[in-house]
Length: 258
Image (cartoon, rainbow, N blue to C red; front, side, top):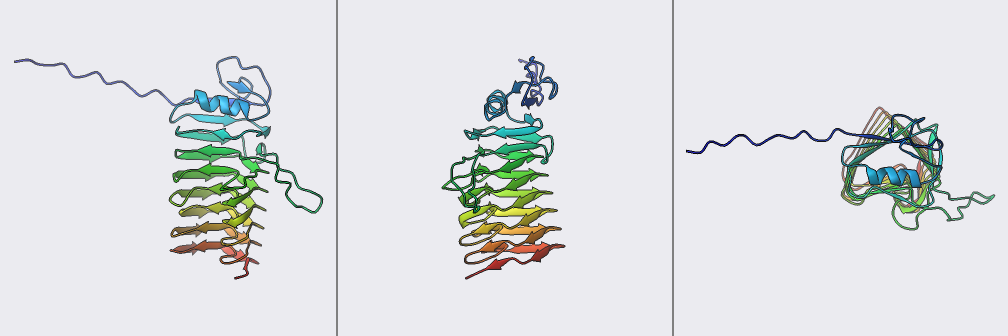
């Protein structure tokens, strides 16, 4: 008769927060924005943090405007991007506009991921992509967007957020303003959208879904406001071919021209 000892149980590594700041010399302890793990004013320190991070970690992006000249790709890691607040942590894709407000199409994508992701307290602005998504591109995953803002982003589908045809986007306490899609989903394109306590203002889609678009998907909206959104075909505010559920929300001056 052989009696074996139970196998040892190893605790999972605790989650780590990596601090990214515009200024300061990283001293290795990564304890705060004054003692960051990585520093710089563009995409490079954020990318470096994403390389160092593992599943469950948080990248804390300290106050400042970061010039995102090359997209930040989180790959297949399960991460949270936390800003110091949408009013002070700004990721800028670099697209510019002429005096008539026409896009010069010279910006780039800001953020891309292939795993579930949480974004909190960040502004994404002036991103441009001639395909799907410009501010955030994710691949049919669960994306949470909390207390964030999206301004002047341009793409073909889902100008601010593109989550494929089988993803879920949960949006809470966020703002989408003047984003534009050359096809559909002026602000957001996904399969399932769960929206609460958010505002969508002056977003535009050349075809369907001035603010939110989904094909064979569901949209649930609560306590939110849609104002001045437009679509060239269907759904000035929301376009969905399945179920739309709305409670406690306001729709004003949205239009579709089909």
